[in-house]
Amino acid sequence: MGDEYLQQFLDETTWYNHIVLGYLLPTNLWYPLPHFLQTWLRNYLAGTLLYLISGFLWCFYIYYLKRNVYVPKDAIPTNKAMLLQIYVAMKAMPWYCALPSLSEYMIENGWTKCYDRVGEVGWLPHLLYLSLYLVFVEFGIYWMHRELHDIKPLYKYLHATHHIYNKQNTLSPFAGSTSCDSTLHYTNSFYNTCRTAVPRGHLDGKHS
Image (cartoon, rainbow, N blue to C red; front, side, top):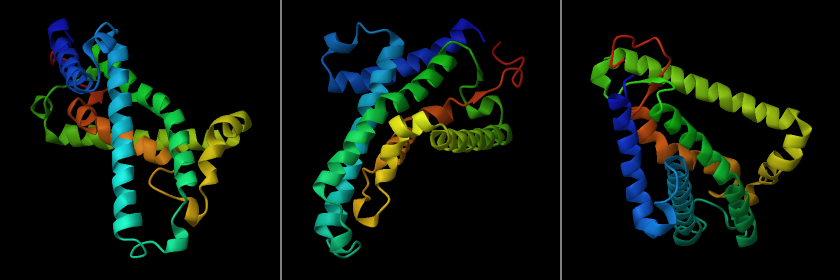
């Protein structure tokens, strides 16, 4: 792909960075950073805010406004348990943010063949690529989770805290890495579906 075609991906992520970081941080704190670090910081701040705001709103509605309606009183986790869950998720958030940041970096640098609009390949290939993407994501998540159990040091130092929430009265919207992972998925789903990456060779002759 030519530099001009790749530039539009870089321009768009730069625009996203300016929107999020420009509203949340003074310019002198983020503008001098390299583009990749700006993207990571955008994902980190947006993901953290979405995680905390959605979790607090859920707790306020279910645990406070609708107390005892959807969840029995003895099944509501303590504030201490939820704060611990937030702490665990915050430890994982920087690592989760690195994954979508890396995928954007790969797209911007032409490491994968991409298309900018569905019309460039048609709806059928687009849906096929999207389906394959979801299959590979689920496959990767399964094996990552399995290895976190099978490799003892990884389980002990990284994954064990995820399993402290195995009782009803310790489970909340803030629990573990699942909520953190879902937050990053929704934060970046628009970009990753519109900027679908497909293997090199599939779109030969288009914007090369």
